Image 1: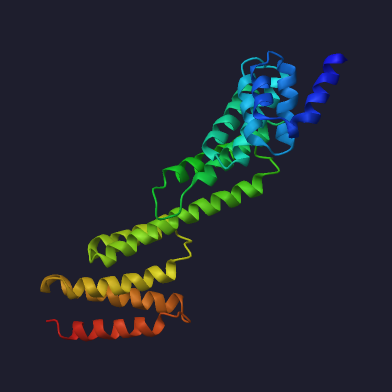
Image 2 (image 1 turned 180 degrees about the vertical axis):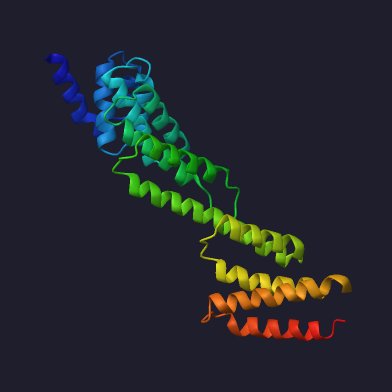
Amino acid sequence: MKNRLLILAVLGLVAFTSCNDFNRLVKSTDNEMKYEVAVDYFDRGDYNHALQLFDLLQASFRNTPRGESITYKTALCYYKQSDYDIAGYYFNKFTQTYPFSKDAEKAAFMNAYCSYLLSPESGLDQTNTYSAIKQLNAFMDRYPNSDSLSRTQQLLTDLNNKLEEKDYNVCRLFYRMENYSAAITSFENMLKKYPNTSHREEILYDMAKTYYDYAENSIAEKQRERYESCVEQCNTLAYLYPQSKYLQDVNGIANKARKKLENIQ
């Protein structure tokens, strides 16, 4: 009882303690008091001080109910501080150490979600994006009836859209670099890889332009084939998207390609 009253007294003074008071608590051997104060810091959003105490208590309470709470709250502290890499590490550690905990599913989702948050914008290296997709899929496999399933699927959609955007930008980069062969191959591969891509209309337009410029810069023996491919792409776009905003440009490209074909023996 006296020890409990002492802990409550310390908690009441936490907001007013000096650095020296906190340092004395850090050096104390009373782990129960450290835990109570750490939880109070956590509840009040002082994650830095909470972490310092939780770190000291990890070994003492490992594989105990307090240890379970410490590991989970440690992960949440790093998450709240936007340190998603370390937060993910502790969420993953929690699922491995306490697989039967009532919080195991939430920790597994948060581990995957931290990976999602580490995924960079589409123009950068996407290693973290692939890792996040792997972890989100693993979460769905492990918890197929989770309440977080729809959110997980939306996160996966966001990540796959990011990869699609990166691939599309690479295709266009080849065109801007006048590497027409690589551009065409990339556009064709993208249509196979993403059959439902939202960029299909733009890709057909880009391919029409690419084939025309490719033909213009080709040797005579290759021009007919490439002008014909240009006209084919123009026709495909006009058929699939009769209201396309690119239709006027595409008709112009097709007409130029047909005139070129008329002059080819």
